[in-house]
Length: 412
Image 1 (cartoon, one colour):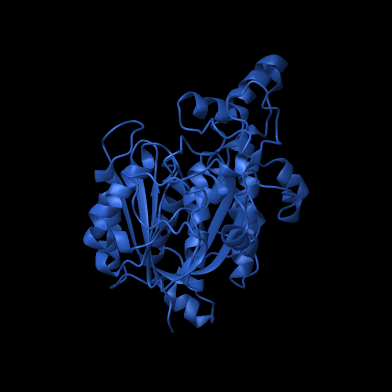
Image 2: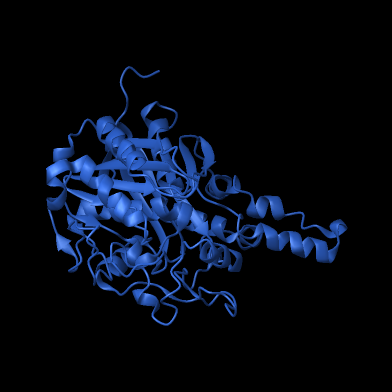
């Protein structure tokens, strides 16, 4: 066991989002383009109450992995491999047989497609099951396929804690690095939930907006009084994390330092959010970072655009930041890219790292009718240059599993 915990930094970013592939495409979308929400193109939405989503456009998995392997991999796996490969390349590393790089991925895997596979199997007959289904769609393959495709033999696991999964995976990877279980970790989330059953189920339980099928770019509106649910999305976001010692030794570019992580469980309700649980996660992340709440310069909110979620998070931020809350900007990337469920924390961690590195806050779109219960500074006017020494990122899961992370600006 190391005498002291190792410091951890971010040295590579990989993003596959509704704006396309790559961190720069993602950044341009967040700062300069309209929300990437459209009518669904992947399937016929006739009869569905919700007909919009934030799909990843023009994704060609064969650009990132062997064609035969891609054919035997589910879409969430394909996107995870793509984001992981981009993060490695961004960090100046080439895929090779490496014992020191691990992989932690947050995903829901094939939850929303399993019923379709059962129906197909029943129609064909049980003696004609798809022999590749387990390796194509099982949750463990979210991380395993990345390790296989890139030759990475460090710790390897898949995390599912609902919408906190991606950031949860990053936090667990940070812990592995701190304790010396690896020198580098690829961590984040990947999700492919723009599926008919997902839209039908989430709409039925009241989670998705049903009011903007004809105006997709206006549909995701965190903190706005006219919000009535989130927009489902897909995508993948991966960070290359490494110990500071290892990064400095190879002269790596450092985006930010991960100073702290924190988790909580609300123990409150199957679906309703809890300010108390969210407060615990934020305070634990700040305590782990050794940072006072008075040092927080910005908050990357979970901000899903749901009726209950946004004011609950607003109240939690106020409890954590106290009298400073109204002076600390809060940003909501889901207003541009929708909610990628288990992958959202990973995708938005890429945005958080870029905001800290580039000292610019991305805007919250569609905030046109302020909600009296959501009265913080949500950066609604457009990209904002800012001094961001410390950024707090939130990811809150359905059912009360919460994860938070504190990023610190890197200075030589």
